[in-house]
Image (cartoon, rainbow, N blue to C red; front, side, top):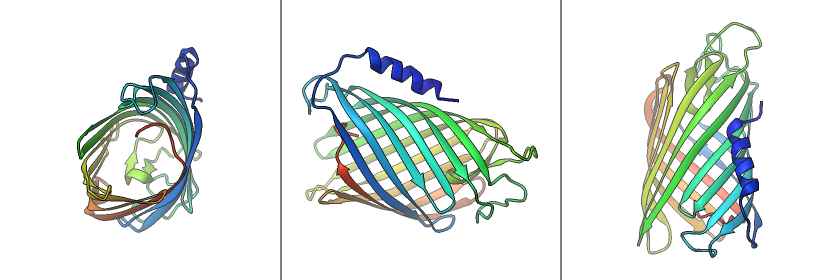
Length: 258
C-alpha cells in the first residue's frame, strides 16, 4: 500500500505556488562499516528541487523536493520514495514510503533458524529536520516516526531481522522512532569535524539501536568523504567499536541546504 504520509505531502505540494530555477539533482556512492561485521552498500539518490518563494540562498526561501533513493548490498535491496517540504531553508518536513527485500539467511549477527532473515519490509514514515549555523559552528537534528509491516510467507511468526539496525522485531507490524543529531565545526580548510548520534527505538519488541561517533568530513572537488570512529550498540549485538567510511559523488547538486 502506498504511503499515506507521502500522499498527504504530495497533495500539499500541488497546492503550493512555484517559482523558477528548479532542477534535477543526483548523487551516488558507497559506504562501509566494521561492526558487528564488515559490511558495505552502494546507493544512489535522484531528486527534483522546486523553489516556492524567497530568493535562492536566503535562509527564508521555500522549496519542495521529491526524491528516490536506492541502496543495495550483495543480498539486500532497499527502495525509498520521499517528498520533502522546506517552508524555510533550515527546516524540512518529509514523508515517504520505503521497501526492503532480503534474500539472505546467513547474517553473522542473527540466528536465521529462530528469526526471519528473508522477506519483504514496507515502511511508511513522517519526520522533520532542523539545521542551525553560526560562524564556524553547525548543528542538525532530525526526528522520524515509522510504521513498519513485514510479510510472513511461512506463517511461523518468528521475529523479523531489521538488518540495518541489528535488531529483531515484532513479527508482522512494528512502530519505531529514529532520532539523529550532529554538532560540529567547519575548519579553516572547509572540512568539518563533529559528533554524530543516531538512536532507534522499536515500540512493541522494545529493541533499540545506538550509534555515536567522531566524524571528519572532507570534500575533493565534487566528491564528499566521511570518516568516523565510535560506538554502536543494539540488544542483539551488544556494544562495540565501529569504523565507518562513506564516499559520495555529487554529480548534480541539490538546491536544498541539508
